[in-house]
Image (cartoon, rainbow, N blue to C red; front, side, top):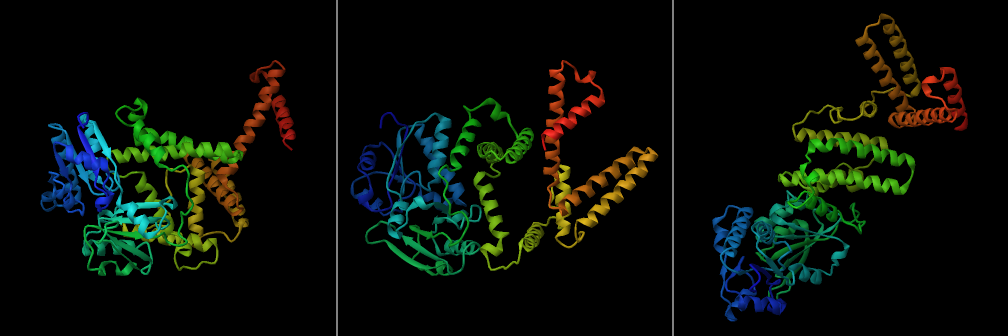
Length: 493
């Protein structure tokens, strides 16, 4: 104890049998003991053992919300620790669903205080045992008081904590019903692992707030939604990459990484995107995997910068896109029926328009096509969006005719020598060519990328032959270069 500024100990789920010998010895020897709350089944037994402590229960009435409460408790623990060695005890395991502990750990690092964690059985351990669930199958632990800010992913089982009253249970129920059927089976557990006090019932979700025995020891176990997306487990979770990025951006991290902003990273995001496209064209699985990792790093980088400003973090990014994919695929996760992929796209645009309407955003069908996209990609997206509501040629023939028409108009304005008109008409030609490509089921961007590659190969062939002949390109005639071009063309056939 003498070498530690703070000991943080877990009191277990509630039964005195789950309290470890190490924790009990530390409680008896600590010169000062602080409890987050004495409203815990094991505390009466601590009284019998003569453990002297002070709790923070008075703050529960004085603070307006739990975030304020947790910050106040953590601040007082840290202030006390700077004066004397102490032990701070919390229900369950210190590192499981204990926000005060995380705040203390962060504050201790800033103050140069040392911290020792004394683990204990978590309430989660008791819940797993009672409901017969293996957490290796995937689990999310969610706070019932902030469920709207961090909602569940239905594909994964969840334990909802802080369901300490029927009022909170009602709010939790309404939030969960946005993601699960009203009759989705749940298990409500009170005082898990505490002999004589434990209570477990399985009920349909809509009955959650009808239980009259819900109190501060209550949690809710929500099984995964059958058929929901995301049941495939990943052996290498994203957390490791997130931790690496947080370290790189931390006090002792990398100077370059710490200097970056959303603005400075834009160029790298664009570069990595194009390198992924190049890898996809190569068909090299190893290269594709590697480049996708580089692109993912950019996503994590931007999320970390936002997290440092308390705007959002990587979990918000993942939750948002997961919810969006479920919401925009009602034919998979709901009762909507579609005949083909065309109807899927129509539904997608309709749902997206409804989302924009709720956010009071422009409702134009084309407003969601980013102006930052490469011009060819954006042209194709604009045309495809309009086509979904019938603004389109019946087949490619109309588009071919339009290309010819635009070429004639270009030829006409070229004769005038008016640069602005030439620029506009040339743009119309390119737009029409992209439309023709779309109707021919050809990706215009990919086709141009292929043409770029073909040009590079043939031109490099000319360079190689010129070198072998001891000539500079500038010394060769156009006829000589054209002849070599045709040779390179013939080799590709």
